[in-house]
Image 1 (spheres, helix red, strand yellow):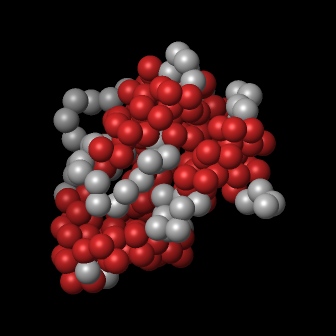
Image 2 (cartoon, rainbow, N blue to C red):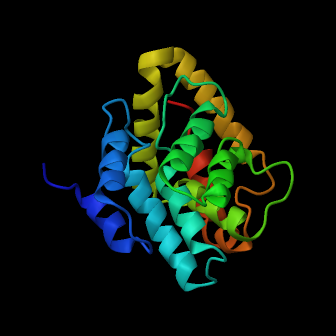
Length: 204
């Protein structure tokens, strides 16, 4: 089976050598049929932001942030309890590669970073989480596609009405935050666009 264009992008950008076995595992997981947003497309888009950070201001630990990027959604069940997917994704990385504790921590952080509250994050953690949430500040057409993709993942499990109600509440919670992004870099680049995108949604 030919490699997907997004997987080819990831392999080309990868700053570390990974075995064919790992790339195959990633492809199999991220191409599961129930995934619409949490897919190789998401990883490739996030990798583009990762590359921009690598160029300036730079990652303190490029290996850990890259592995966290690849594995942060490797286990994805839309109906899992909070933190379960992230814990299992971190555990899978631990089983496959040694010396990945820092990457595992970053993966676990993605379970609660959506509203940028709690203990302030800095350095690689802030930039990594912001790479994951940069979709909020995407061009309007891509953001609308993202919303459709998220709906496609959840509506089959919870129903359209419950999804609309829950999604609207989640988007409003984001809008109510003083900051959407942890780092000043992403705040400057994407906050205005993200708020325009979020303000135009009603959970539909």
